[in-house]
Length: 175
Image (cartoon, rainbow, N blue to C red; front, side):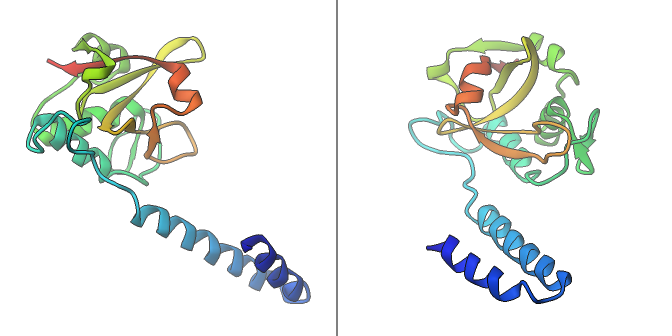
């Protein structure tokens, strides 16, 4: 239904100047992004979360979620831009706990948690291109927040998506 409506609009706009076409496309894109941001759920509570809402992990997850949309920046650890480990360090520091800066150091500073026992704020480690090189923060409900890669922004992703399910190495809880 939407494709047919868009095609009808595009056919009528063929004779319009290119600026109007770009404005229309930008408006549609912005509306899509705004609706996605407006429906972004926060950390999951209840059986799958395993937290009361006031834990250190909950606080760190809340900080991390407020960074959704901030651009990826290699070496970044501020609201101007984040890499994956910078987002984790920033979020935990704002919640009151200092953590190491790099993914490898974060791996060493956490104790392994079984997947069935994960709680909001636990760190999730991934193997990208054959080596442990990525970290995100668990939100409950098989979701996590992370700064994925150059050219992208901080986002919420599904742990059980094909890519991340295959890349997942372990969860760890800061000590």
